[in-house]
Length: 250
Image (cartoon, rainbow, N blue to C red; front, top):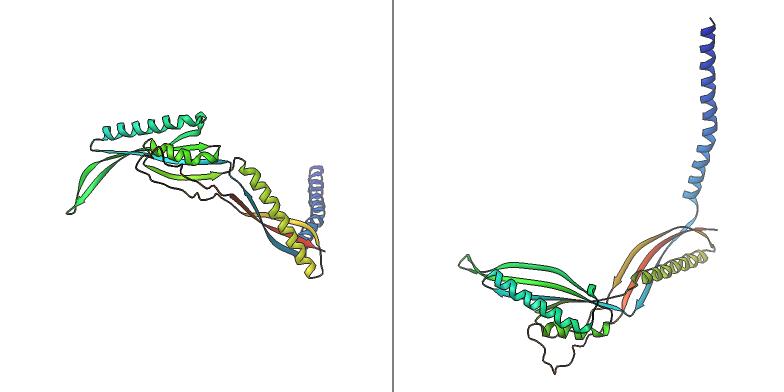
């Protein structure tokens, strides 16, 4: 009899504990739902902003290719290695740091002639692509002339950039955020309201555009000693950032 009574008391206490927990939880859940409903129904203004930073480039990358053709792959590779070494030797006069030269690719490809629906092996093309980093952008033209004079067959790319690209992006981001807030305030004032606080701010786009260099003299023949330096106009690097701002009204 006592055992049954004790079991009944335990079940009753457990039921009371569950009911008490539910009583505490319901108001908390209701409060959260009310807060969410208020956030969803509050008056908001949404505005976009863009920030643009223009700076003169202080770093350049020149990509050059050395190529050699021969009937035999070993001969093509040997000729190509000779040209690549000559390019590096010619660049030594610029006193570049060791990490300023980087090999991007070394390649060997067969070349074919097509006639009467048949292909015939013509020979092999060996190539070596080198990237040169310059911290003095005023010397880009000199470098282009030097590598062509050393036997480079192509200058495939000249790219201008900023050493502190992150700093330029942060400045553009600040300008974009300020522009978005100014637009939000103007929109609110237009309807007789004012901005209360920013509830959300998202970066929606980022782009860095380097200037397109104006240059390119010949690629195949070495430059004559009395020819003027290839002119290269750097222009400006443009860093553009866009944001979207959500603000509550009062």
